[in-house]
Length: 235
Image (cartoon, rainbow, N blue to C red):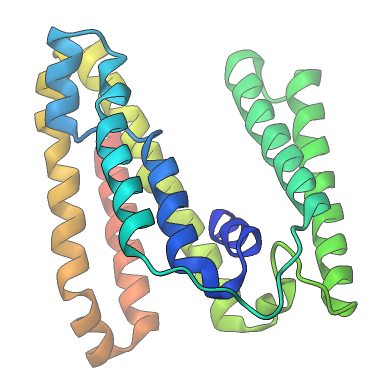
């Protein structure tokens, strides 16, 4: 959500098709390939090629966006929320650095605890600043007024928990396969295909289930399955 909000502020509304295309390609440069190809490359070539392989594909996509997507202009240009960007960045750095230090040295070590406190404090200041910008009619990085909607607020919270579970599993499983079970990166890539298959199998019927039982029960069932899977994996 933070990344999407950043993109929408950086480019005015009518320019978004081309701008978001270029922005997506730039982000694509930082993404590795799929688990099988990535695992094979880690086993046979220099690991840096996982990222370098994306460069020619990104350049082709960039050329296609510039050549094919029509350019338009909006009547009113949006201003970049520089203060919001700075506070959001500081907040993420504080929380992430604190979590890393806590894993290495313990939660009560002063660098870990201090970094987390700074991150949470910056988050509070960020929320107040964004709310103030909204009151003044300016364009904030994140419209905190959206969180007055119960569905939006809880949807964001539940999505965050779901992503935490997914990325936690994606981080832990390769470590377990290679460090504990002594698998090669290529074998690990094949094992991770089950996660991809599970995502596809879950996403396919989700809209039909939501139409039958409603979004609340669909999300509840999905989170219950995720929780059961994580518990099963932990033992």
